[in-house]
Image: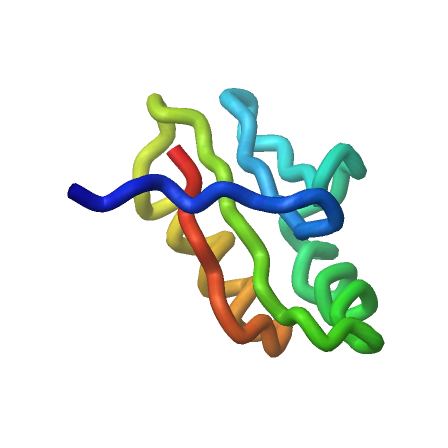
Length: 82
């Protein structure tokens, strides 16, 4: 059985809320500004891993779009949280 990924302190978690608003940890960010913000965050980080948390009632396609944006920001690994 696959276990959900568990972020550690200092990890980056991108969340998509029920209202489709996006956060990076607790910082609100627009979908249009997400890639640039992630590039800025990861420019100086050795650990290029993020976790993506989407509300259960959202279509997976919406969460997949966030994952695609993260990969475009040169993030090495994306883990999906339940």
